[in-house]
Image 1 (spheres, one colour):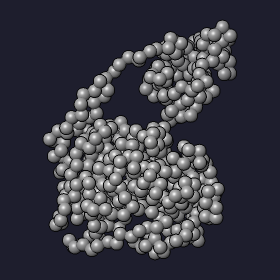
Image 2 (image 1 turned 90 degrees about the horizontal axis):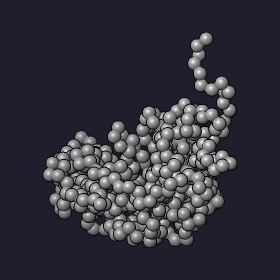
Image 3 (image 1 turned 90 degrees about the vertical axis):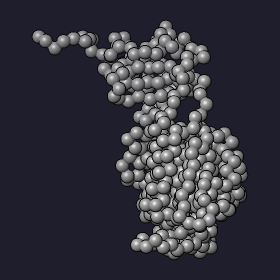
Image 4 (image 1 turned 135 degrees about the horizontal axis):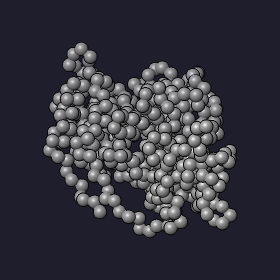
Length: 458
């Protein structure tokens, strides 16, 4: 049982308001709207503006730029989960003649396909998509400045290809697939291809004067899957909740977890990129989400799985206000001031005696580990001293377990038994774990010195 979700403390709400007020003033943004989600609902929202007109709130639309890429990634993974494509497929299989070489769908999702960062001039974000009617116009004469799979290189054309891939495989427009497969099931009726009132106008702010000029809001055409969408803080927090937990109407928990798994390291320390999601590790937590910008707008969306908190910050200025940083700081304000209350401990509903007998101390060579039984017949292997490789394991139908974490992710753990049925050792990716260090009589790779354990004296 858990207690009902509580309101944020007045001091926390004050800190959140102070942060967005400072951000709007120091970032010199005409307006800013932000919101925080905790325990499955919006816990706080706020806005600031120095302009006349409607006051921005959680229902005000802003353009979200590259956060659009995360939506496109969800559409691609849906195709994979339906068996309509494989992430290891070369893009040429579904979009022949693109010039993307041997780049795979997986590499496009994780920005390791070697494609260029931008489409050829003129600047695609500030010109109509009709100037780029074909994929060749988006990719240019030199589509791959880097070999596929060799490095992380952020690519807007890469997500254009993914959007066209969705259209080719699904047989409907990217916009139609987005609306039908993500927005409608999640109730995101304020996320749209073009602006729907109330929405913020896009502005550029003069760097040396408090003056503004209107920015164009172009239809990006083929480039839309890389940055077209308009959304609100409230809608994006619904999306963050889905990305944290999954929703079988859209994408399973296992598939959204896959999105949060690093696909390619970036060149920035502590950061990474999954499948359509940016990953940032701080001293205290790991954040998942995405930033976005288009002329006239900046956006940031982050969520922390461990804290069950998400935050959004949206502003209508081309530059100056670090929306991604602001969103991360709003998240931290709540998570640090009001830490998540853990679920109460409770015993397992039932215990398998055979699995229970496996728990306790095990040794890999002279390294000591503990094995614990978890819910759903899962296992957890951890070094006793706190250092070394550990992992959680999920059961497989054949009586073995698959590793879920780090070094042992995807590796198979199995129980090796003697002829009489007793347990000889645990085999984990060829590593033998025994009840005693190099246990006598156990099938330890390399065998055991017949002299056994002894001192070194004469």
